Image 1 (cartoon, rainbow, N blue to C red):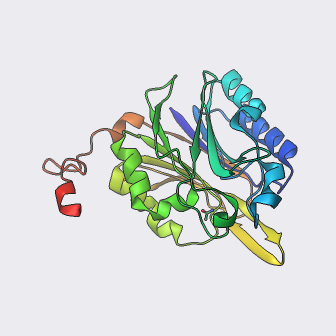
Image 2: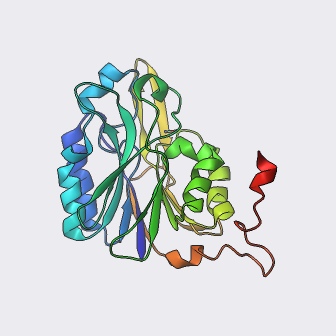
Length: 261
Ligand code: ACM
């Protein structure tokens, strides 16, 4: 199957434009699974819930994305600002399946000023069997990477591929992210963005370099630091299901949870 990452830089606050651009990318990208960045419908940087709320949508309001995924028979993972006129906002990922079904993952670990904007995610980590291909897909969002438990939970639940919509603003992730793939023997698709956003004289810069890692933690394909760009890799999801790395050692069977308490 084909796994794609779209490095897309949204216009902050222009939800109509961003959704149209995401739909264009879905139509143009020939892959079974397409991963977009975190908060791709809205932009990233907000100081509080009130200023973010105009750009929030419920998952069912992303009908153009859901319809494009179904028509093109793709699975799409896309970060969005989830919520309505009242109630909590979440930093979420829409998972739009090729049969028209949808799921939502809400970011578990909030980064920096996200704490003032979003409620902590309450969906937990889950894995979906994809309708068209023999592949199990899990999702985490950006800063979730800092917690090995995120990817480990998804892998223990059977994920072959972990999608990681991201808006990465530091560089340290390049050291740890491949380890999330290697230590779980899974494919890992990190969709980052480039560019910058400024609020009240504070600027955050996003560093691009989106990447698809193999189950050995090697780079299968990567983007540059500044441009919008799409990468597509032919992957074998079944390669992740045997967790041995020699005849004696299996990274899951060798675990000693009784020693970790
Ligand atoms: C991040 O979680 N957007 C760094």
